[in-house]
Image (tube, rainbow, N blue to C red):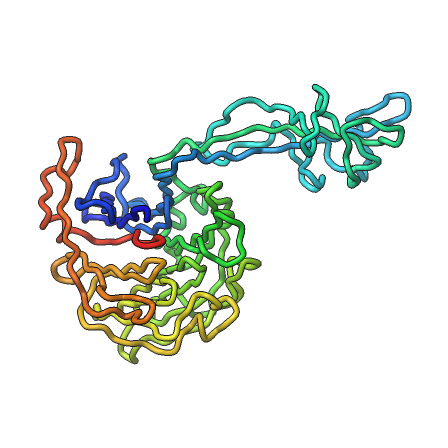
Length: 418
């Protein structure tokens, strides 16, 4: 089994990682950016910076991330002129996508961000279904929606050829800033971030779901996030019921989303499926008690955990992510169960393992004994691991105890532990 990672942030905003195959905490390379919160899936770490903006960190991939941009050049045969770029008003764009519905002029196709680089110029695709084409790359058809052939025929009234260009993601093992909501990033900064959804049934391989909360208590969904597009495409605002102010959000590996409200209640997102990754509606879930306010939630696979304002830890019974997209009961569960011990912060993995930071000692704890038959586990167990000391480390003088006391946030999520 490949090793997995546990991430943590100390009180200086530095990010550390502990491998299941290792025995020591290691600091990620420091580039001057401190962090407040982390959320991770295998190879992709999202963070809330000290500037309240969002960053993504891609790591541990053996094969570089590449995307192929495509643009079809379309021409129509005209009397006297022959094939021409002068198309009919009802035709598709001169340069378009495969079905002609989108303008794909090559001079307008840009890199997704500064984290990408072109690997060459535009080149012609010189094969069609494995059949070689001539050096010009043209394919022919009766009309644009019809089937294309490598050879020109007497009935060929249109032709097209495919231009391709490859881009490579060049920000491996470094933090890449995600575009803010507004030109002025301080207009509406972020206060929380969560990534998951890598196991939503029926989705395209590599799909991931990223949810966030802004300082205006608005919930945002990052569309288009995948292993081929680590940054995603854009932020989409997800409305919440009137009177609800969200301050924290958590998404599990199968797409189940819970959010905590300023007044201590919780919301669960219903209808998250492969056809609607954003979900359809919200359902209110009451706090564990009349005088208890939920301040943090963490979603696993068959578990949802909460911390209330008195730092008590609670387990939500009856939750099962598989089927939660079509079942309100499986998404919302049936009741709260209190655990022994007070914790400052919790984080759940995709296989329902639970990690926490102690209230008084700031020590990392693991919930021992969690298994499919006992999702609440047996007891809290201290996770002991020293801090690796090196001359290159900016925190070389930090002792193990000081690091543990200063830990303020955990980011854990993977097939086993992150």
